[in-house]
Image (cartoon, rainbow, N blue to C red; front, side, top):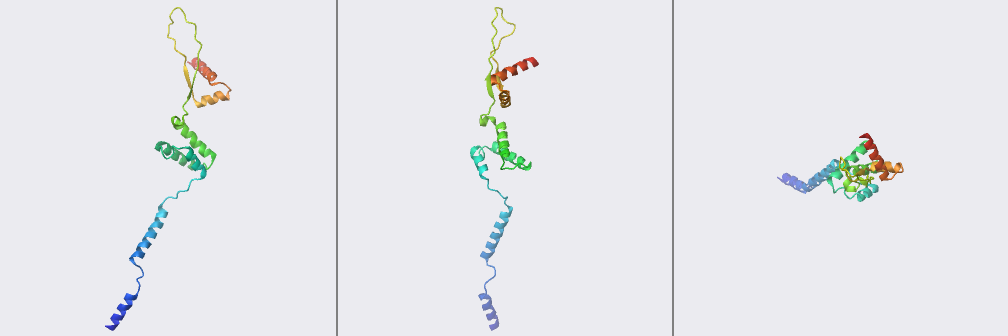
Length: 167
């Protein structure tokens, strides 16, 4: 009996190796370590990316535009374009302007070409005369006019001439 009481006293005096709290802490630390491994690594954006985002207020607010920008980012990165290069930002901006011209105010510019009116005849003409034609030049056409050192009106007149000649 004495021996049993002695062993009981020793057992009660011993500190358990693992308490419930220690087991919970170990599980929490393991689960937080696993969570860190499972979370995707998100690199902090560089200053240039932050500047670009500040200049493009639609990013993160307009779902369609943001999705296009992120998809374009993936495409550019997978094709080997450096995300911190001028080419990267230029291509994203060009694509956004091309796909959403109404947002950026890049709608095609219009120029009105004044055609010379023929003197009216006494007899009614066979066809009705129409007012001056309104031609809308695209950005590409405006760039070509500038390259050829023509005014947009001159370019539009030549465009009308070629269209009339071609039918």
